[in-house]
Length: 393
Image (cartoon, rainbow, N blue to C red; front, side):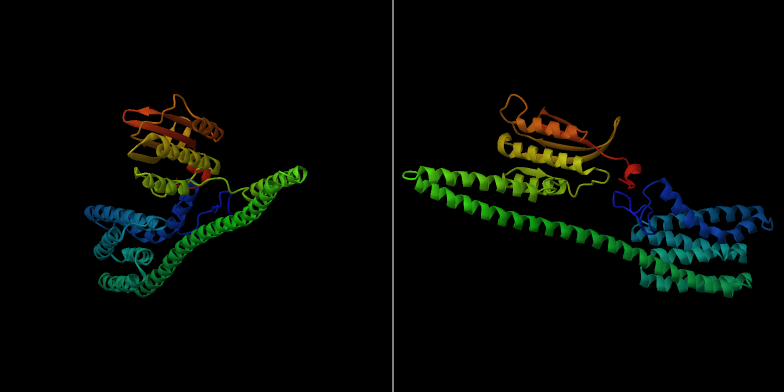
């Protein structure tokens, strides 16, 4: 399966919620094809062989049945209902199917196919293994009453398609578990890479700093009697330090961009250690947020928390992350508010000035100043619309 530049599949597979209008139409078409079994009850209603009351009741019952079925099956393909709602909707289908087939004739036994599909697609495997045969038994009894001469074929179809949907449902669950496992593996790989970088920096700087220390001691001993040799040691120290700086820059290339989730966790730890009561959001929703914009927000959060801990004297701090729709498009807004003094400076410091420049580079903006009961910093960055990123952010 091909992927776009965001790393997401171009076409959402079974089990993924639709992320744009095109995928929504594809899902609807995939489900709608199976409504072919409704042709028999529709023709029966149009034949005119029922009374007006029976025709109206059949039309309403069929409409309710199809609406419940589509709602149940469509939602199950991505964001399933809770078990209680699933059982309630299945109960509605389990009542409508036999009532309509019993009251209107053998043309309506095809509704049991949809009931079997719904059971296989939405119920746990063990429950589906009981519900599907029970559906077939009820259909057989109704078929005997209505005189359906095709009941044997229909019975086989209900059982086969029900258990087939059970397999599809299992496949969907397995795909979901695999996606979660892949995300976990990616996170573990990132953590391992951070550990590798930490080890590399430790080895690199340990060697360089040890050499600098040794040469500094030699230069100190040589200074009184051998200034030329001491000068040579100082020159060597300069060369080693410059090379260490180059090595560090090469080692951290691509690793200096902070992550917002890590900064939120660090903010919680820093505020708690400083005796500040903190309200920090859970895992941030970063769908549609470019990496540069996320990094800018992470720097803003780090600077804001540093100011709260060092300068504000605050007792409480509230951190909020909010997706908003503005005239310029969707944005992600970070708000950090405390009840402290906001520092003693008369104007924006170097930190806020640097943040403003960083946010403007990412297309965002920064607002900071006193509020009624403290100090508030607000940083905004633009996000891509759902249609741009192919997700439901």
